[in-house]
Length: 119
Image 1 (cartoon, one colour):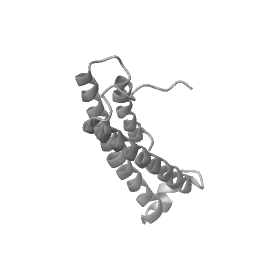
Image 2 (cartoon, one colour):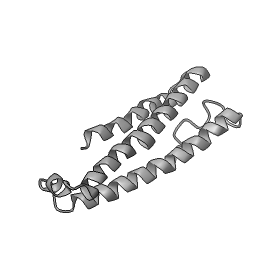
Image 3 (tube, one colour):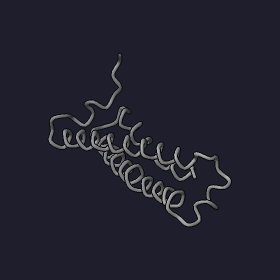
Image 4 (cartoon, one colour):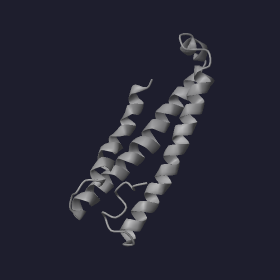
């Protein structure tokens, strides 16, 4: 159940490259790959897979047979944790869109705002 959701971490590779000391064009390429992989995996594929499991756990005729080997409240935990992560990914998706728009409009350079802030 958990293994397909590890595909969400594919976007993290390109996020790490945004913080590296590359040329503007290379940073732009990795920004594009990060945005594409983030939206593909975190906002399309994983919510689709999550909803498929929710359908089986709650709305399927075989839901009792599917949950016999699972802990009693697993389906409720799955629903709550999935909703939480999908909402969080949606929040970050909006932040990413706003960041990309700032870079495309020229109000931020490609490398500006890509590093961690010291606290």
